[in-house]
Image 1 (cartoon, one colour):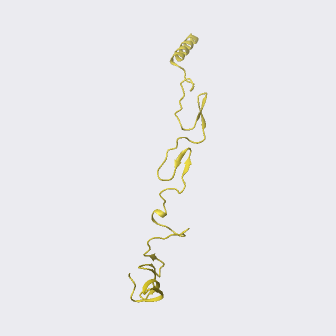
Image 2: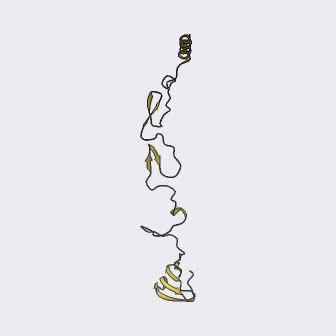
Image 3: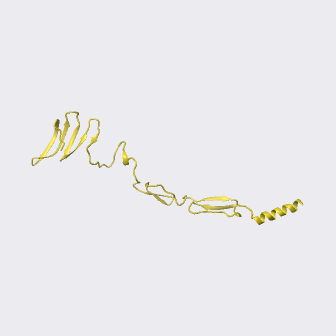
Amino acid sequence: MGIASSATWLISGTSGGVFRAGIQVLDSDGTLRIYSGAGFMQLSPAGALTNLASITSTSFVGALTGNASTATTLATGRTINGTSFNGSANITTSSWGTARVITIGATGKSVDGSAAVSWSAAEMGFYSKAETDAAAIMYAIALG
């Protein structure tokens, strides 16, 4: 069981002649041991609590290490611009959320990132080849 031989018992309990629980202080360094059945936890003078299988609490104060400091996922997932996010992986949103009007040439179009948007040459204010050729001819005629 690991009961220290050089220790002072503060509390010791038996039932039916069988050791059940106890608290002892180790004479060597003042470490406190709390026994329950065959197991015990230990509190060192430096404040280290060891030999525990688990700890259950509604809250912890102070620095945590391991996964406790960087949880694997959010306790409650969120939706960001229509895309589910729980923190377990990167996401690419399906839209920007709020639509924006982007104007190219004289044509404005509503864009939210959910689909491709394109403008024709005419919408961007470009002339077609036929229009460009006709304009060149008219310019040449005007110059005489």
